Length: 534
Image (tube, rainbow, N blue to C red; front, side, top):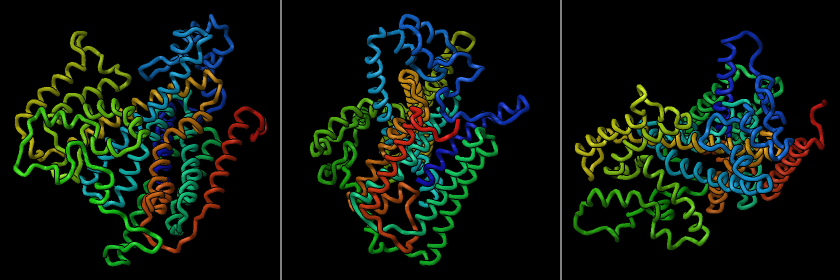
């Protein structure tokens, strides 16, 4: 959680600092105020009437109020959620759009999780392999960014608008506290274990320093570009510390392979993981491979590559996994059509010539249509030729050239370039989903009169932490609680050190601490208690 949390805060507050610095370059004065998500939530004097006053209006006036109030306009995003709630449905049927928005919100979390897990992170891993980075550096840089991509993009999108800045602050803090208390406590409850003290202390110290710096910024109520860059400096210093500790450990053991200690179970090999997790579509093991060499046609390769279902895995999975898989199939199919994935662990690097050539067209086309909610893609050159048509034409020409000059059996030498394309396209997918997610949360906050901070502490934090929760608890049940616990506070712990026991009592205390924190946050939100004198 240490590098992830620092990266999320650094990315979000760097945007806020950049906005503050941009505003300061145009006029002299104090640094730009940082809205922490009060009940006004950034509706300042320059925006006029607060959109939250729509609930005080009569039912017949709400639609006109939403259409005519600048604060109710959602600058980014593809759907007008406020207009749909107050204009498309009668006031008596307001729970209906709210229910639809909640379901769409849950599905957006699914989109974020699938995109990050199956497309964003693998391409980042391929990029780190192409750049020949060590596992330690890749773990605290590319892997940390990949695992925290939904949080980073959600925070950046929220911080780009002062009205939703409270969502970013609440989500970053909420996810950090949730993972380090509920998830870490759940791991201790599922599988008590002994944790290494020195690496754990290192990650906690960096985590506490980042929290203290954020507290100072929120206490003074403003942020500058230099303060935001300080977060990036803290993260770079953390990466340097991890690399230095790893180098010292390698020097002490003489570059020999480290044997797992009594408190550290052996990590399964790639072959074991592949056998336990199931193979990819169309690859069912040695016994299913033909005895004679056989070259599939391009059409067969395309159909197999676009199939998101594994028949062998489908038959041995329980019903609830199948139900969730059915929900994910539309998302995975669209992502397979638009996002290339490079897998360095495969002999062919996951080279699918017809599909990769199709990605040359669909990938850039999706990027231009999702950038600024499609405004750039729909722009017409000289008022005649749209930009998206020009991108599609250029991509088609390049795809034809690649298809003619390559073969199905062997990837080209420049295949690593597809990893960068997949990284860019999946990042645009995550950014588009995060934008819709932030707009839905702001709409729900206006409907229920909840501050953005509480929505960030609860819904956004819980949704972005679902993947961490299930993956870490599953890892603990499989016999790797120490690895799962280290994922809550930092990267993999490399230096064996004096250990301390983490039992069920510790896990219970962490969960109770989170419940107490949540109660205080909600009581403060509804003005039952006052932590700051008025």
